[in-house]
Amino acid sequence: MAGMNNKPLAPWIASQLETLLAQRGHAWLLAGPSGLGQYELALELARAWLCEQPSALGACGSCASCHAIEVRTHADLFVLMPETVLMASGWPLSEAAQADIDDKKRKASKEIRIEAMRDAVEFCQRSSARGRGKATLVFPAERMNVVAANALLKTLEEPAGDVRFVLASEAAHQLLPTIRSRCLVHSMVWPRSEAALSWLQAQGMAAAPASVMLRAAGGRPQEALEFYRPQDKSQVWTELPRSMARGDLTLLKDWSPAQTVSALQKLCHDMLAFKTGAAPRFFAATDLTGGGTVASLTGWAQALAVTKRTVEHPFNVGLMMEALVSQAQIALNSKH
Image 1 (cartoon, rainbow, N blue to C red):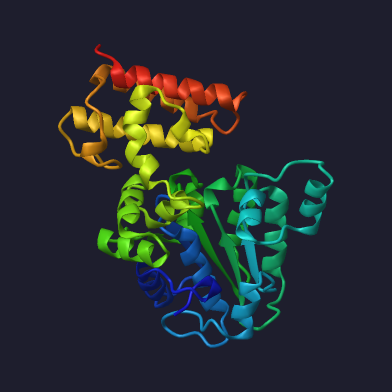
Image 2 (cartoon, one colour; image 1 turned 90 degrees about the vertical axis):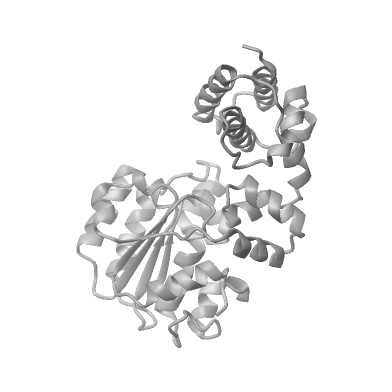
């Protein structure tokens, strides 16, 4: 069974797809942390619902419906995402949204706006163009603001006869409880490390970098692949603890503040685990330094948590990066 662009689906996604297709329901919520393939599974579910020749394993991959989804023009599929995610994923914006952004009236939104939700509600009320029913895909569902979520709730409560929904979320606890209760909830499966490593190697990673990147991503293969591209970061990841202990900023020259904060939180987590006799999760134990104290590392963890709240809007990226590395160096070398 093929996934988008006719690439084989990861085996743990394919098995979950088969499980979901064997069950009935008009609204699914795919829930789990990032990097487990919620979006891929949601899209394959919608493709199978709309496919002209579906099997128990999913969509055929070759009919007119599958082709229409491939080229992002299917009249019976509504993809509801923040504009930034739509653009990154190759889905078209509405004409009104595209015009606003082109005319620089506003920036692309990072949340699912009420205007897009109104379009989705109107779509749900129309008849199916191809006669196979309609599907609405929402991702990441937690990015709906309260007004948009309430508008969706009404449609979920009283859906038109031929529309199905799949909501994919990386933070399902942030959704309105009433939305969660209207959906059948599917918890995303964590793949075994052997299967994840095999899949990463099939995506073009060598065995050694695949192992490092999978650990860096906390066992989440999709996230490992996204972190690996566009260039191999496995060597950088291995060197990161000692580099931060030296206060060396050069290793992070191509990283965003958000990537840096995430990496430093993982390093801080593993150093605290190391200090308290637990196994590290994101780094090999041999890559960690022996410096810092439980008190200095705990203080660093609290400071990183505060920084994370505003990391998407740094006043000065260069100064922020210097401050982050300086903070890391102090924490990793403290004797108190």
